[in-house]
Image (tube, rainbow, N blue to C red; front, top):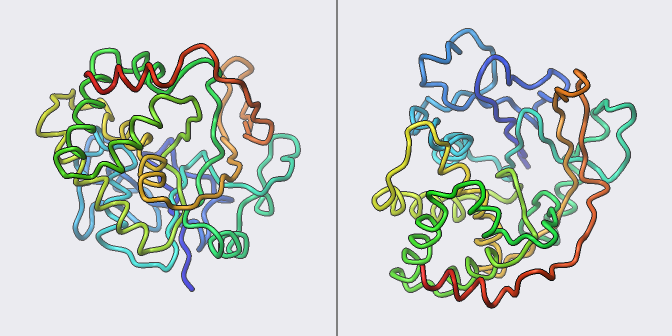
Length: 280
């Protein structure tokens, strides 16, 4: 069985550390077709501008150009997406902010989980008294309503009430799954990508966006749980480590989800948010 968790990155500064690049976690350069990034001399396992690709659209699609390239050109039995600084980890402490190979989810872990679940996803983040719709409005004040309106319209026009209902439910609650990271079988990945990219094509026809907005990458962050719940797929939440540089202390640190705190949702009634969304 072939398993690959593609370690996506986009330029010299974001190339994954060597400890993260293995046969299980090959490095995939996204946006490799963008000459202004000057990435020709980067050594990596894969580039998203070979075969069938949308590499030159990376400024709007972000890591989704990697998704698309994998979908059209690769065929491992199990496919996963990680980022140069975000990785699925075992539920164990990371000592001194130093991620080691034995901290990372391995082949056996993945197989054991996917025997019982359709998808592996990052552990959710509770937004406390903030709905996902509230967050989206805050981050994209000029586009959030249009994006959600046309997502709902697309699935309504397709007669896919399960997706329509899933969008309403997900956007009205506060359990957020970030990062466009997942692990699943090749068959499930095919189905997921076909639905996602077909929807984005529809949104592109109806929404004007800035060239460098990374908008479709952000839209896709909403989609794993919309897809999973719409299709009654099972999923397992797994901790992730975010290996990053803290500007305040000028030191690289690892933030993990091991201590993710739950908070009650109480400020807004989800039913009221759903009615708002239906009337967009």
